Image 1 (tube, rainbow, N blue to C red):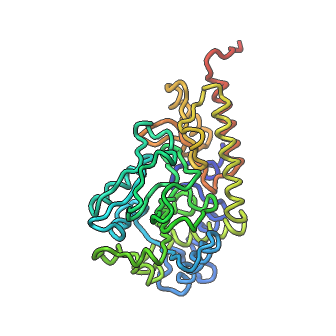
Image 2 (image 1 turned 120 degrees about the vertical axis):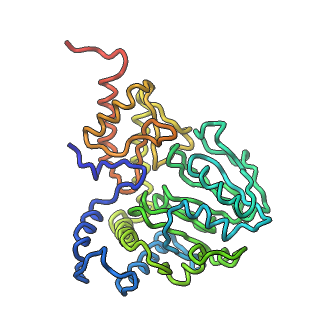
Image 3 (image 1 turned 60 degrees about the horizontal axis):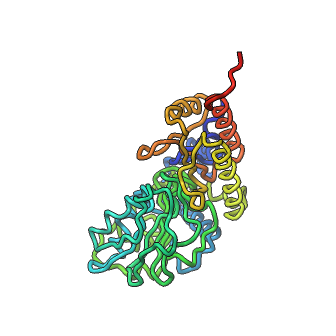
Amino acid sequence: MLDRNSHNFSAGPGALPDTVLEQLSAEMLSVPELGVSLLGISHRSEWFESVVLEVEERLRNLLYLTEDWNVILMQGGSSLQFGMIPMNLLPAKGSADYLRTGYWSGRSIADPRLFGSINLAWDGEPWEFRRLPRTEELQLNEQAAYFHYVSNETVEGLQFQQIPGIDGVTRICDMSSDFLSRPIAIKNYDLIYAHAQKNLGPAGLTIVLIRDSLLERLQRPVPTMLDYRNHRDHQSIFNTPPTFAIYATLLVLRWLENTVGGLRTMEKCNKRKAMKVYGMVDESDGFYMGRAARDDRSLMNVCFNLEDKLLEPIFLQEATKQGFEGLKGHRSIGGMRASLYNAVSESACEDLCELMTNFRIKHRKGRVQKW
């Protein structure tokens, strides 16, 4: 039986490094330097304030953030940002450009209409969200208040390999499912947000990176909890923050810097993992079928089906029996989904490929029976 923690391919909350889980397990009872449980430390303590500062420092180091960038640690998941962004940045008579490339970007376009209007610069529904737009297909507005897109669609397994949008128009990106999985050309963005439960930590924390220039563009009165400036001015402790999730994220950031060696190394590892699993799909003579167009395939979420749909529940049962977690596809499209977030090891991907190989040998049509 495989270790389910190390073979967790869940789309989120996702896998965490073993060393982080071990440290969190111990400190749930007592943080060594304090002698009290991690869950009982005040958010106003000097210890926790130092945690927040270190999270910001490590994010700045990993992403090469200049001084005009603010790091804000928030709650509410990326779904809250769907409303906060237009509330803060979209004028009542203004328009913003949005891309609809899958399930989550589709979820992002309802709230902006409460505050202004949107231009749907491309909609992937006619292609069943199996591919991403080419540059020449985008119907962008040079006068847009901002341009918004999702860098990686977890449900459909699509990931942008190039940065869309018009330089000079405020560029906003939901990077929830591939944040810190690879280097970011930070100079091309004005606001980036990502919830933690993919590559960074447990659910409950959302990281917002926002330039100073955007914070001066507040267009309307905003409730205090939904005003980015209040969170900036209070160093992310405007109210009681998700202390456990923030500390867990700090441990992951330390692991990413000190153990992995940074984002370039992480990206190389993630590419190797994805190549193994996509290779298994592509070399199966049609037994397994990838969902996304090859040029747009996600390194984070490998979505595939079986040629014989009747075998899909059997595959999932066998996977669960052998200790694999989280391989069931999203409810909206079904199939299989292997999420290869940062903490999923190369050896776990090799074990998944072995499972897929053995299942194919056992169930392929026309196999030779041994009597």
